[in-house]
Length: 133
Image 1: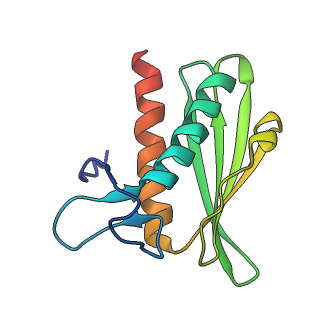
Image 2: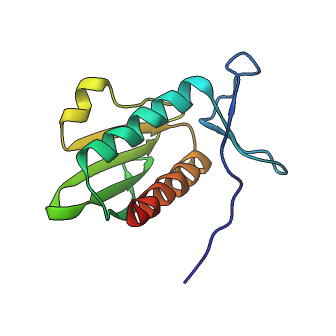
Image 3: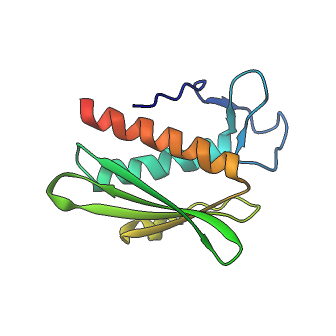
């Protein structure tokens, strides 16, 4: 079994500085996310919690669509309820709109591969907490 260690996510004030990436990942120090994206991530995670009851399994399938790198996520909760999420590297950040959360498939775009990795780590950690609750 592999264990990945990474710093806890901090929320940085919106007016501190604007990064082109979703997560600020300095070579040394903790990762951070803007207040705006932190709110969007909270809405995303709450939508998962509202839709799926634990325990929740998370399966990731990396692939390419055309020239874009993507990761297809399949989250499955109790009674076979599931959500499919496609995270695609496009150079910018877009979260699902509120009305999209009623559908079984959600789309997120992120600026680069480091953002995909850190988002997967965060979602995996959240799914682990489902096991405990």
